Each structure stands twice: as structure tokens, then as C-alpha cells.
Length: 396
Image 1 (cartoon, one colour):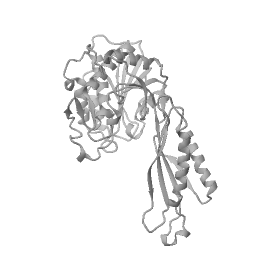
Image 2 (cartoon, rainbow, N blue to C red):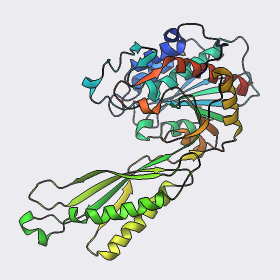
Image 3 (cartoon, helix red, strand yellow):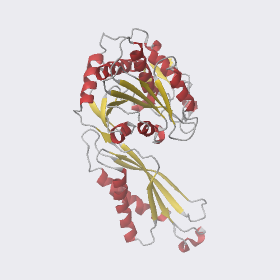
């Protein structure tokens, strides 16, 4: 990556406001499930003490799990820009395999390490830094800058949706999830499918008098893979096909007893144009064929709570092209316009709020949810400069 020479930030990469904010956020655990978001929500709000920013704690999940909206009012007459990110992180598994303390914000070789460094406390730190840059200017922009710090995204919970429903919306939006500073206009959806094969429990020595759901599993998998073949036929220009992956099988309580039921879970990734409801019904059609061929086959089909619908805006949308142009000035080379294979809350900005919104932020999705999670500090600071310039252009 070629870095342009007109950076406004001359401090060492680990001493910028964004880096200090990131260290503060990493050192405040917010794992989901676990500690959740109460402490980090207060931490974020403290970054705006003594400023004219308006803070709104929005409780849409369980008590003690607030999302936070921060609004910096402009002088009036301009559009509103939303920068969105989530407060929660995945838990720390295999802590003994980490070479650093997951919550110490260790800096090594130009990277800051810690749980949430890339997903996505770096994005939150960028939002804080952009806001402070605008607050410190003597002349206000015309439009309002709205920051979302949402609870519950890692579990698909409606933190961002709650902020949208509370009126914290705008004309344009940028979700600061990790894209390595590439401009994403499309994102996959996610549905965790649950299939329960019902049986009739009995001692295994008299298995013929029961109904063994495990014995039906092969037929169900055949149906799933038949459905998967159809899934792969649908191609998206940026994301390719969706996917359907069996991930978990559970059944039985004792080795010498026929199980009452057998559960199968699927990870179903959707591309724009597909919907959760329609795809569940398509899968049901394949399972109904099994039932027609085997009258003893009995099943239940549903999905786990809080699925993600896919989302997209046109590749030539004004916001996407403007962000690409601004990033090109800062970075030296315009980043590509892409689709992201993961799911995120851009769905709520596009699908629920009707906003023109993209995903753009520091970090690499390959370094999320993993041991020794990290983010590049130079990329962090580049993101601040890009989004500060974008905010200034949009807000006027």
C-alpha cells in the first residue's frame, strides 16, 4: 500500500488518538456471551465527556446491555452521516495459546493485539477519532455525524436495529467492520438452521420396537446436499454463491438406548436476492420429499434467533464511488469495490433504515475470532484520515 504524504497525523502510530482509544477499548472486555456491553458502553461515552456531543443509551436487549448513539450536531442544512460499529466481541477460547494477554492491548511490530482488535474495536476507535477531529474544528460542518456503538452483533441481536428504531439514522452510512480499507457494497446473510429428526426412545436391545432418528440422518443429509446443489446455482457478481454447511449433530443420551431425537444444525450463508424465509421453505421442500418416501420420518425445521439478511447497494452508488475516491487520495491508490463474505449490521442500515451504506474499516477478517487477534496501527490511522475526509465532504 502506498501512503500519501499529506497525512494530518504526525504522531507515532501507537500514540494517535485512535490508538489510545483502541487500547482503552481492548482493555475493557465485552465478550458475548459473558461480560457483555455495559462497561464498554460507559467507556465509549466517557470519550465524549466535556464535548457538545449528545449521548443516548438505547436498551433494546436485556437490561444492562445498552447500545450507544453519539450525535454531533452540525450548523444545519446538511445531510446526516452514520458511522456504525458493534461493542461486543466473541469470547476468548484457548487463552493458553495466546502469546499476549487478550486484554492488555499489546503493541508488537506495528500491530495492536487483543480480543476485538480487528473485530471490531479498531472500527470503534476510528469513529471516536473522526468525531473528535470534527469537534476540534473551529468551523462546524452543516450536517450531523451520528455514531452507532451497538450491542449484540456477534449473536445477531438487534442492537443496531434498536438504534435505527430509536431514530438514530441518516442519509448515508459506513459500517467500520474490517475490510482492509476496501469498499464493500454487498454482504452475505446468515441463517443457522435447526432440523430435529423425531424418534421414539427404547432400550437398544429392542430397537425394532422404537423409532431410531439417527438411522434417518443419512436421508436428511441427502436432502440437505440436494438443496445445497440448488444453492450453488445462484451466483452473485461480487459474492459468488451462497453456502449450506452441516456443522453440528446431536442426539441420544446413552449408548444402549435409542434416541428420542437427533438434531442437525446447518450454517446457511445467503447472497443478496435470497431471503431467510424463502430459503427455509425451499429446504422444507426437500425434507417433505423424504417424508413422502418414508411415512415414519418426522421432523421439525426452524432457524435459530436473529438471522442476518443479506444486503447490497449498487456498485456505482454515489457513496461507494465517493469513498473510493477519497480513499484513493489518502492511500495513493483507489481501493477496489468488493463484497464481503461475512455478515454484519450494514443489513439494518440498508434493509431497515433504507440508507445508502457501505462497509469500510481497518483490519483483516482472517485475523478475527482467532488466537492473537491483531490490527495494523498504520491501517487504523489511515482509516481515520479517510473517514474524516469523507465526513467533511458529505456533511459540508
